[in-house]
Structure formats: C-alpha cells, structure tokens
Amino acid sequence: MATVSDVLYLNSTDLDGLGLGVAEIVPVLEAMFRLRAAGGTIMPPKIFFHRHGPPFYSSMVSASPKLGFAGCKWQSGDPGNPARGLPYIQGLFLLSEDDTGQPVAIMDAKWITGNRTAAASALAARHLARKDANSLAILGCGLQGRKNLEALKGVLPSLTHCRAYDIVPEREAAFVQEMQGRWGTQVTGTGSAERAVRGADIIITAGPIEQSRRACLLPEWLAPGSLTITLDYDSYITDAAIAAMDLVLTDDYGQIEDARIHEGKFTGVHRVDAELAELLTSGKGQRMNDAQRILVFNLGIALEDLATGVEILKRARARNIGTRLSP
Ligand SMILES: NC(=O)c1ccc[n+]([C@@H]2O[C@H](COP(=O)([O-])OP(=O)(O)OC[C@H]3O[C@@H](n4cnc5c(N)ncnc54)[C@H](O)[C@@H]3O)[C@@H](O)[C@H]2O)c1
Image (cartoon, rainbow, N blue to C red; front, side):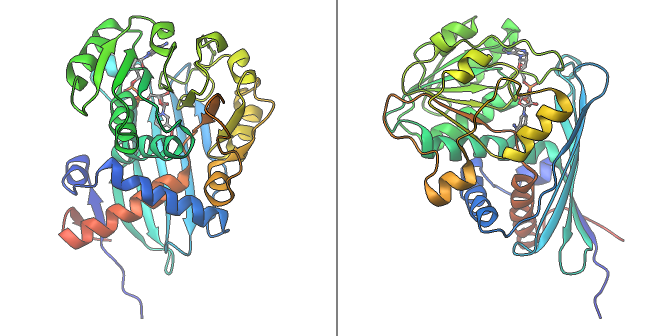
C-alpha cells in the first residue's frame, strides 16, 4: 500500500540555504537535455499570454519517468514590478512523483527560474562561445543580468570584462556597483546598448518581453565570432541581425513555432539550425570557426525547471530543509 506523502514547501530562503550554486545546475541541465534527446521526457508546449499590455502569465509542465517526477510552474511577469519593489517574474513550482502522481513539493519558482535560466546560458556558452572569449555585454541589468554574469564567468574564466546597459540609468549604476570585481570581472556601464554590444564576444539580451516589439540590436554591432543569447525572445534583436547570423539555435523548436502562431513572435526567424539537445548529443549546430556569429534563442523550457526542482528536492530532503505540509 502506498502512503499519502507530506508536501515539502520551500521558500526562497530555504532554496538559498541549500547551497545549490548556478554552476552546479549547469551539469543538471546538460543531463536533462541528453535525456530529452534520448526520448526520456514529455513536455507539452508552454502556455503564455499577455494580461493587459506587457504583463503576462505562463504555465509550463513536463514529466520524465526516468527522472521519476513531473512538474508544473505557474508564473506571472510584469516589467512594472521592479519599480514597485517586486520581482519581474514571480510564481510557484509544483513537483509530483511519477510513480504515484502524488504532489511532493511546492517551491518558489522565482529562485528556480533565476538560476536555471542563467545555467542554460552558461551551458550554451560553454559549447558555442569562442574559447578565448573575454568580453561580455549585458543588456538589462536585472536579476538575469546578475545571474548570467556569475554563470558565464563560471564556464568561461577567460571573461575579464563586462559592459552593461540598462534603460534605467540608476539600475545600470547599481549593477556596476554591485557586480564590480565580484566574479573577477571588470564591469563598466555604457549608457547605450550599442556601446555595450560593439566588440563583445558574448551578448546577453535580458530586457522585457513586450507585446509590441521594439527591437534595436543591429547586425553591424555584432563582432565576428560573437555569441548572442536572447532571454527575451526576439524583443531586443532585430530581424536583420537574426538574418546575419551564421548559426541559429534554440532550446526548443516547438516553442518558437508556438510563440510565432499564438503570440506573433519570431516572424523574422526563417531558419533554426539546431536545438541545444542536438548540439550536445550529435554536435549539430556546433561552432565551425572563430568568425561565425551565433545566436541562441533560449526561451526557457519546463524541463529545466523539472531537472532543477528534482535536484532541489534531493538536497532539501537530505538536509531536512523546508516546511512539511500535511496532505
Ligand atoms: N528565457 C528564459 O528562460 C527566461 C527566464 C527568466 C526571465 N526571462 C526574461 O529575461 C528578461 C529579464 O528578466 P529579469 O528577471 O532579469 O527581469 P528584471 O526586471 O529583473 O530586469 C530587467 C531589466 O531590464 C531593464 N530594461 C527594460 N527595458 C530595457 C531596454 N530596452 N534596454 C536595456 N534594459 C532594459 C529594466 O530596467 C530592468 O532593470 C525578461 O524578458 C524575462 O521575461 C527569460
């Protein structure tokens, strides 16, 4: 007879207390992408819709009998939130064990999203950036800007400087002050997206995803050999820059198509060369020389949340962290 489990609730303080660093999530994601390529996962398209203007809701579900769990993330995004002292992205992640279908954990999704997204950038950069990459451009000095600097430095110790731009000068200045030297990288504020991007080896676009696209990143800003990773769909990068890329990859073809059909995004994407799972398992879409300009649309997939959530649960149980809720 199976017994009904308690549900473990883990808030962001509990998650911080696990000591699970973003660098440790990179191999967790790599293993998940390999499992995905081997057919060991299930992931319906994510649901995403704007609320009224830029704010959005989304729900992301996935399962893996091999991992032994299924998960669902419910979240909202609102670019107006930081001005109100609230995070842009907020939500909860629910984990069920696959054998019985029982819910076993509820976790703060903001923590998971913040860390797994940066770990996914690091995974892509480890395989696609030039080995001698030393300069990073961050567009959008929020949570992802911070986490991406940490994660990228972890896989590319050669990164010596970071040029950062935020549309709000005070946020750019705060980023520079907070991150200066923190990861052994010199950080400069640029006051302009173009100045941040020109000459950079790696570019992270982490501005808001908006209903009305205001893309401005032009192809002539992009150095030969650069790697651009967008976290904000095609919000920042122009269609001309997308067309100028030698290689275009994504974490999920299906989600690009779904966003094109349902949200009118990615109308300038006419070719995707490979998914990250294919890159990792067969080398499809790999960098062929140091001059190629490569673009990765990292949309963020439910399986990243699942793999990270499973790792969190393992650690929380081992360390007896979290609050038990009776069923
Ligand atoms: N792909 C994924 O897996 C994934 C996961 C999490 C977040 N995101 C996306 O990443 C982006 C950043 O998320 P976050 O949590 O860091 O948000 P955040 O609110 O913490 O930071 C966003 C920053 O961008 C700045 N900004 C707004 N417009 C800008 C512009 N035109 N140029 C430069 N800066 C601008 C804001 O002032 C803010 O400081 C969002 O679009 C979010 O939806 C993607």
